[in-house]
Length: 463
Image 1 (cartoon, rainbow, N blue to C red):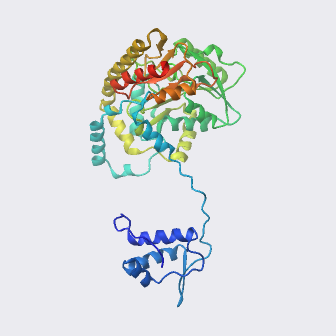
Image 2: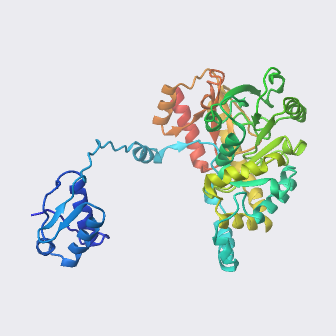
Image 3: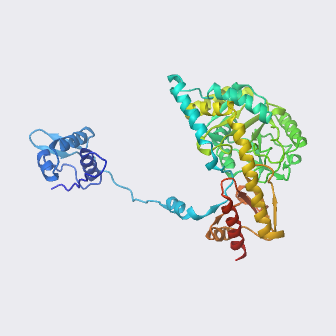
């Protein structure tokens, strides 16, 4: 008798259950080549199911080559259907880790207040588009993105960031990560040199290192990249920087250094890569004008809506010098054809109707109150033993602790107290300069979490 348990509660058809279990027995060698199977009538009686269930299962197995039928003899297991199974190694670490971290206060940077995402407005716009749009929007789109969004962005970026571009210079991407990956493929080979701020986001370093290029670090200070250290003896493909809000240290690059960068790029015939990841949330005055506006043919400008709205949207963009447009479009085409069209159209309407500016105004007030509370908590809890800086813009700040070295052991201890923090050292190229500094994000946390998180951090450090 062929033992095949049937579960009528499962949302899987009975014929599929029979097929799957016989298939697995053959693949695992429990049913061997040449072995005869019970007739469809006999097996249906044994399993108490309709004969059609068994017929359909056998037909599927015959069609896939697991079984062979011999006229007048019956149905047999085919040769060559046994597959040696590798040792199973199930890894549940990620699931366990996520469950264990549910009660941890996570000071990760760059996460917006997702509970304040304007869902009703977004849904209303999306529903209108679904109802009013032609069926053609459901087809394939252009790799550079919907013209509606690119036109809207060109106007919006000029108005808010001083970015000077034609819609044809914009490529819509699936977030800033794809934008940087495209640029890496566009500009870098294994023999090239790329200059980068140090420190800078670890993931960005990884993207550009994947090309095989050499990364040449330039230190930053409280104003951003130290342009006096740009090497005269090298000819890089580009200089990567975050001039409006240096990540992670928070400096804003002054005009003198911006001009020095432009002059350097002209002299070296290289590009400047400007990552503008969260400068909309500037608390002392309006956002700083872009570097791109000083020389649009030298600067590639990268932006996204992950920090402004939601990472789940996966919409970013590159503003390109004209000479790079066509090649970048080709790369985008072979990467994913195009970014989802309906999301692009929804975003375009969201900006056109003024919802974006109203949302940014609202969020600036919210994030400023979050920032002020965090600074107050740090200073009242740690007193003169902490210095706070890099807080003029964005959703994180830097805390420098007196006589504290954030080793892996200390970070683990802090986590055991229910707090997760992020050392600046995680994002450095040349190690050992920022061992006593933490990046503390606050945009996504509730006020009681900020207060409790700082208290737990103090207890972990001083216990």
